[in-house]
Length: 333
Image 1 (cartoon, helix red, strand yellow):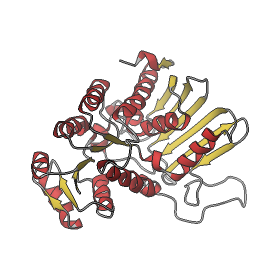
Image 2 (image 1 turned 60 degrees about the vertical axis):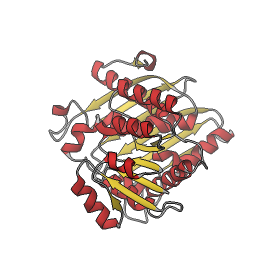
Image 3 (image 1 turned 120 degrees about the vertical axis):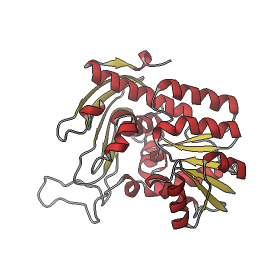
Image 4 (image 1 turned 90 degrees about the vertical axis):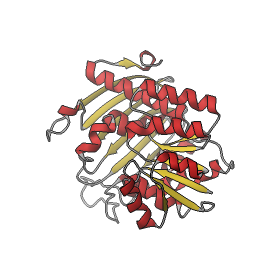
């Protein structure tokens, strides 16, 4: 099969290289808003390129992977659905609720699969924690603690179009928490700070936040994120129940150091980027997408799932701005 790749930046290049190794993919065809960048990536990988996205569909593809800038996601998903082509798109669906709702409605009407790129659903640790919780091995769940910490911030140009820390970064935790528990967040109270380098205040963004989430079964979760974790890229989750607990992300490359003398588990270099931390999960989700295109798999994460995570992110933004708790029901449309 022929898979189109839209967006030749860092994550696009990673996806293109991965797709070339997936069984069943005969060709990867690259398109980008900058044709020169598409040609550069195509030349480096030995992949086909086209001048623009319409040409991608004119020449025929069986599925398309969208790795373009966030503010282009919704329009590109609509285009793929109009063409009747299964689509994989990096999160989020869009930067705002109206555009996301439009995609969800189009997805339902078109009856064409849309797989959103929440790669943590394919990470071994998160999947094992979910299985342990769902099996009853942990007893009844009472607390979740999620941590997402980038080693360093992305470029200022990226930050300007990212949608902000809650929507761009935190949305991963909001999605994985509802996926793992099978329950929805009903209220949030979020705090954020732009303490440090003068990069965020002018963007209306924060570089660090803490949010307390209450689920519809009264389980509590804390979610924290930061753009400045010089020790390395750190993503972890604690799942605590009445009979046991599970910890995700405490492998031998976790960028944390114990304050207890002579206690350490680190053996390798700390993760520097999300691509290192979730390499296997990124590969697994694209293998699943190729199976989805071949009609051998179900959609694991729809645009509607992306909408649910965005509702939580929007509630966090509103809570941070108002300084008060916010009910997710007040965000829903």
